Amino acid sequence: MKSPPWNSCDDADSTGGGDIDSVEKVAPGTGAVVLRGLTKVAAYRDENGTLHEHSAICTHLNCIVA
Image (tube, rainbow, N blue to C red; front, side, top):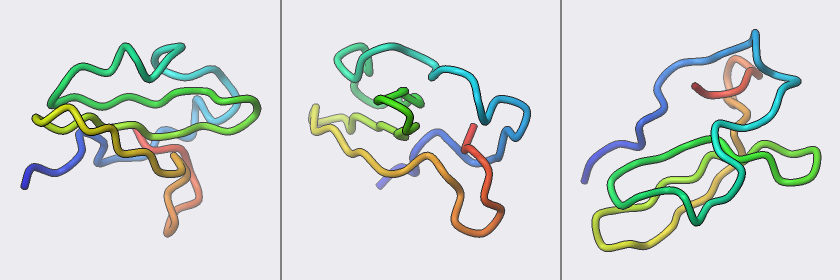
């Protein structure tokens, strides 16, 4: 299984928008951060087309994944 494409933190953009405006734009095998209301969501679409969503806040550094 491939890892999601985020593997670092981006504290400089913790208050800005997401990478894209809709999870429908996440192509298979890619991921992005999406702003949903005031919450950032890390979205990854696997090769089979299944969308996986998690909080975009890193649990150990408390920053936004990049």
